[in-house]
Length: 244
Image 1 (cartoon, helix red, strand yellow):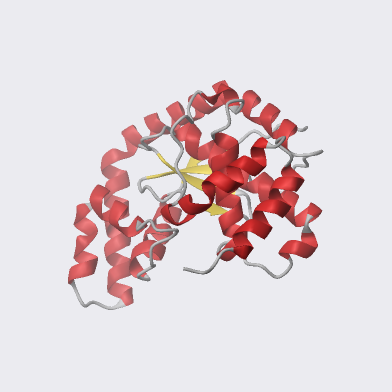
Image 2 (tube, helix red, strand yellow):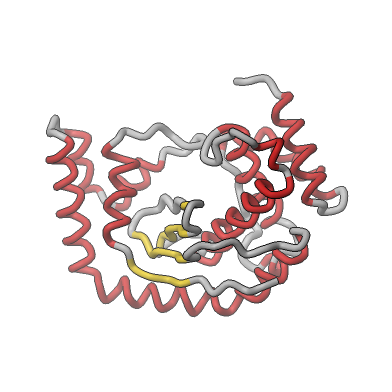
């Protein structure tokens, strides 16, 4: 398959908007993880947003001023981290795309920016519409973990939308069973012994709300690493489970 060269850049404005999304709009926990708390832990100054009764405009200004100041004070460290992230990924990108070629059938590279934006917060969202994502520059599992995780999402959704369009027609890619499947597939695929020699991914954990499905969907994958079987049987299994 055609290799993709992921671009890595700083994107201060995106950090502002993602912080607003997870804090300013009082976003609920995702899959059992409260990403807002991780932001407060790494940036305790922003706790002021929980403690005041200011308008959205005033809270947005707090976020913008804080992020501007953080980047200004730490720009050298951020640029150094950006260079290190790029260098680390270049070591493993060939192995990653070789694995992609093995698990997807005739994988195609769809149009997109394929850019990873270094982030000062540990939320690591991906944006399917333009094939971009954020990567927390101090991620405890290493930034290659985040990069592989998010780029794998791009291929999974492209494949599922193309090969199983009837199954997923009308489903939201960011919530519900479609999102459940995408996240579980990343855990199953990345924790397999043949994934990039499993150098970085030995202790991958699912979202807390997905843990109850993991043994079954992993057993489906172990039947032969067949992506189409996995999608169909995992969908049927999760869809058959009672709603908590």
